[in-house]
Length: 263
Image (tube, rainbow, N blue to C red; front, side, top):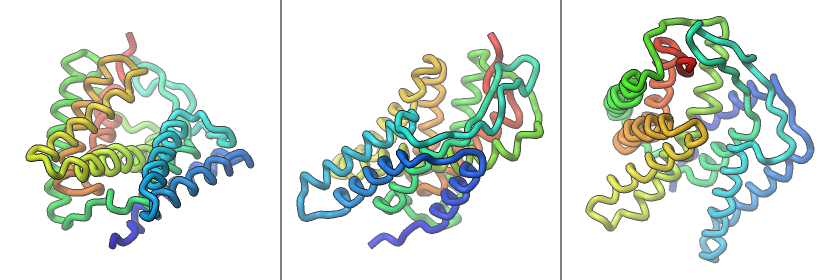
């Protein structure tokens, strides 16, 4: 029996409260909540196997729709208006999304096994390993491709960016891609000798492909970063994966061109 990951749920609640400060919900958002509750009930019950799979299928559809902001009733407030953090960077803007955190809530409540609990020491070691590897592969690759350059900074909006990135972006993405996808594939491939490796590579590939809209460079770099996040998750659990992902994003934001050099 898995205990609920209350720390992560509290963090998501804080992030949701932060987003609510800048936006608001419409009544149509209840449709999304109702569908997620239906998916959760179906996925948690074990009597009807087809219902269990349909519940997970409905969640995957809802996760995609929420992540792409397809569903009505969510009015996401803009936290950072378009601006350049350095003169040579492309413009950056940021929304505080009300819809995306529902993915994390569903996963932590319905699939608490995604947390993959480890000791604090092992989590710290896994984070250090994952962050070193993802920094070398992703930020090093971005430097080689000429996408970023050295640009230390801490703009006025940095604290808002920090809380949004940790609570509404990184925590949700790692719960989905590492906890749910990699963790689920690891359970499915557990009879294979290299099942853990296959699960890590497939989840990293999918994570890269969701960045396809930004171009092949971002697909490559996100996929490489995903390898570091995946290793952190495998050996340190979800907390290590979140810390690794957030650590890389923070290094990128604070020390290099963000989000990338202007053409």
